[in-house]
Amino acid sequence: MRVISKSKPRTFRLHKQFLIFSLSLVVFLVIILTKLPASIQLNASRAATPIELPLSTIGRTIVDAKGKVVLLRGVNWFGMETDTHAPHGLWKRDYKEILVQIKSLGYNVIRLPYSVAALRSPNVSNIEFGIGSNIELQGKTPLEVMDLIIQEAGRQGLLILLDNHRLNDQQIPELWYGDGFTETDWIDTWKMLAIRYKNQANVIGADLKNEPHGKASWGDNNINTDWRLAAERAGNAILSVNPNWLIVVEGVEKNVPGQKLLEHWHGGNLEGVKRYPVRLSRSHKLVYSPHEYGAGVYNQPYFSASNFPKNLIERWQIGFNYIASENIAPILIGEFGGRKVDLNSKEGIWQNELVKYIQKNNLSFTYWSWNPDSSDTGGILLDDWQSIDLPKQQLLSQLLSPVQVQPPDQPSNPSISPSPTASVSPSPTSTAQLKVTTDINSNWKTGFCVSFKITNQGNTKVSNWQLGFKMNQAKINNSWNADFKQQGAIQYVVTPLDWGKTIEPNQVRDTGFCANKLGSDYQPQQIAAVSI
Image (cartoon, rainbow, N blue to C red; front, side, top):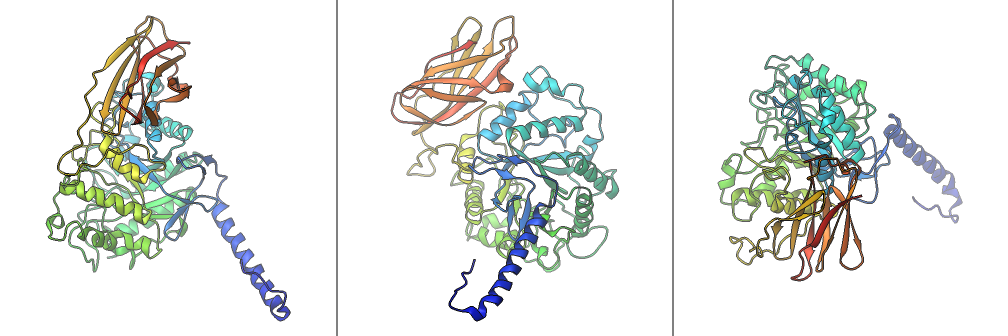
């Protein structure tokens, strides 16, 4: 605020009027951002300051209800858009346990894909209801399963971005209608969800349609194909019943008047925004969302250019990031991912470059994918649906706060992977009823990750338990599914979260941590679990 000098009495009245105008303007902006239904405090990131919902936008930034800048850093957990009508992996794990692990790794949002067909279906499949909290999903419709996942995500401090990924259960359509569904079906589904979750504050918005491509156009005013116009119709329909939500609009593939780049990914072409912006009734709710992939998904010509990877920066600026650079609207990269994160392959180089670009430009993202069963990208989880793809998580941890996993030392020859220390076989430790199997499943020069599987081998359920171990020369930097507390110099006590305290006969609970090595004597010892 400008200080008014008492030595200039002639200008005091003018300054006073300017001050009153400035304060009025601030009050007006606060009213605009807070006139929506009362928000809740959600500790949706690992930063110290909680996010106050709902979210809005100012220029290139997403902000919370108090005007604090928010960076969305998340994952895609898919499955509800397929014929299972439920997020994948529930045949292997407790849904609450999965959400805890996502949060524990430092992510604050889940992009949750669905299909219109799934939400109209009465049935889900491929859920093992005998695993922990999954019993709560038994007998539920797909929509009711979505309810429970969203509610638990809110309790865990995770935001949810809903994504209309498909219309039917089989394929991603070019347009927002087709495959037996009309535009009205599409918009009515969004309005139903907007009303249903109006008071579920951790549901932050609608990614209107996944990856428009093929015939989809932008800015040509063809009512049948112009995705920009369809996004306006759907976005305004949603905001008419739920003004809290962000409206997330992806790009197209081609058919943009005057586009400069020849190749774009499906949903990745946002070149038309500057000339033909999406016009919403609430402009401070608009976010643009490109998708971006590497050569492992499809070997685009520019990956073989002589100036690769330097050509990527210009492509990203032309394709989508000018929107943020010119303060038009925020960018959320709704999908990027790949199996390789090394510094030799095209895909690995591309993925490292994009992570640096996201970090430098303070962009939001949701990584594809959490699931390991994405055939062309793999996931953050490995095929056992438990273990973390550590190199991938180490790369992404640069974007998370705080850094979740200590990266391994880079070898002098980048074509050679770091050599792990001697492998450790899983070792069981038994008590009267609980057996602990310990597995150091990732091990590198400066750190390691270990998992504990606690099995109830008795005939009666365990209502509460603790695990203890000793560890000399290591310091834990990340853990999941339990509370790890150090007692004394080397003793650790592990207490399960509320949802994991009960272990039924033959049921297994999974927890673990990653740690930095402080010496050669780093392995956990004297490990035991007891019923309390």
